[in-house]
Image (tube, rainbow, N blue to C red; front, side):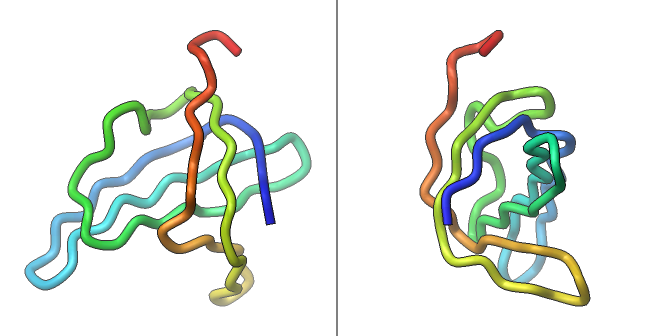
Length: 78
């Protein structure tokens, strides 16, 4: 699945075993979480940034998630 929208929030979670970056993407109709495992920070992944992401959608307790998505940052202001 491919989704395009704007990042509402980005949470960096350093963990002892696997650090994660969790970004909530809103496309105007709903939200999906983009979760990168093993990453502490990702340049350009910040609240308000427009992005397209692609990957397999999982459902965790009613929350849609794409783990380690392929992504493309859209130009600032797009």
